[in-house]
Image: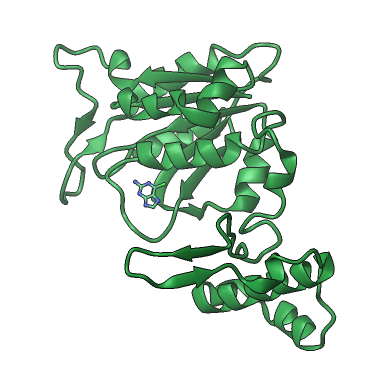
Length: 251
Ligand code: 6GU
């Protein structure tokens, strides 16, 4: 997959050199290209922002550097990418990012991320871009970050790990929280009995120590349900709850 990211703080994205995504880049599975928006501002101070028409707090990102930066990205299309990327603009005013959206975006050959800062990007950039590519404004959740860069780190990691060959054990992709609509069950490793520094003995649940795989699967499913009910009741749809209460849903 080809990924471009445009930012006034390209160093934020240096973290994508590390770990699984860094390895995927070195293995040629992800071609990530980071661009400095200021390279497309041509005045002495490389200005990318200005005051908002109509008044109000803060600054707005100017249209011209963005159109030039995104034109530069579009001009780098090749045989593998198709004509244009899906443009993802991170922002608190977007549709909510999710595992479903990560899966959807992982199916695109080319993604471009436009990281806004300040109060945001001049609205005409969205119009200009929509004439040339699919544009999606995407939010991580109901809180405000100072810019899109940290959101891009999260989204590229969530999308990248779904690409074929990026995560070694494909099985570790299926049983996770949010795949299957429930949170993950609790996990344990050795020792089976651990005494903490305060002298409290803490034991691994008995069922996991025997070899009864049906009993383990049943226990884990119950743990997923109780944990989801406690932490994320919004994930338990009426239908799923009804099925569980009827004893129909042990998948
Ligand atoms: Cl994607 N961007 C910004 N700037 N703030 C956010 C966000 C994104 N998601 C939640 N808050």
